[in-house]
Length: 373
Image (cartoon, rainbow, N blue to C red):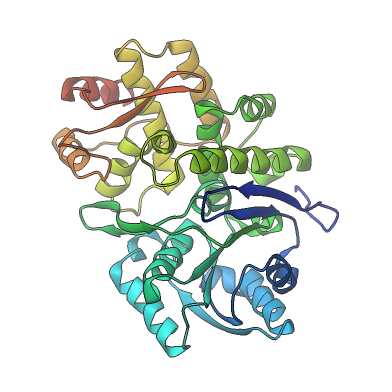
């Protein structure tokens, strides 16, 4: 198994936004010193904190965080919520708001999200909407959250009509990544996170692409050596942060981060969020975007094969599931990326080169999906 220990040096990546700058700090076994870190970095403005986590994370990690905060005389309470996309609802946000009220969170108080992307999204949205905005610190414990969900300030919950249709931009005060938490991550969750890593390698990080193509197996933590793990986390965080800095509110460039997400969200929505993990659906969506690009003459089979080989090395799904095409086309119209009733696709034209198109015909979509079944 890949080992992580105290010899793993702290790395800091600055997310230099114009008015909401923060840092991403990466360091193994750093959770036990969170209290000291927050005070040293001045990430909190008062000593009243609500930790939001889930049951699987509480015992191995959240309890350690709470003790670290209490050691620094910080008043901390903890709320354990249900994990899973099916719980990413208004009801859960109400639960967090109730806890914020019960624990007298003030304007200068902070919510700390400890867990995967679902916990981070919900705690972040609750923080954005409680007292018109309190601080949020993201402590991701899954690979997917470490390289994607925890970075960039996008928070939200699902609507019956689609994924993440309700949300807000709310940048964190700090993102703390402790790679040691990956040791307890189920293998399937690790693979799902690798889908987002692969996405970054395709949309514009040649160092990351080279690193991934040199590894024989991307499907488990045990198969990746420590130096490669450090590189994967650093390159992915840098890739996400650079795009966020260039386009904080997703008005232009940041849209390329949605590569694979348009049809990936369709897969999640039409299967009720309980068949595919987010990363698994995005893997399918990336292949679908590549097939659309091939049909449109924007991308070639050789590049598509390189992308698919990486997904195969991570043992991620790449075939289109059995879904009614009428439902697929209808679901696409409900996506939050639709503008003027036109579905916007992020399509690859080369490694590190993408185009956003809103004129992809239904027939092209159907043809691409048929190639994947």
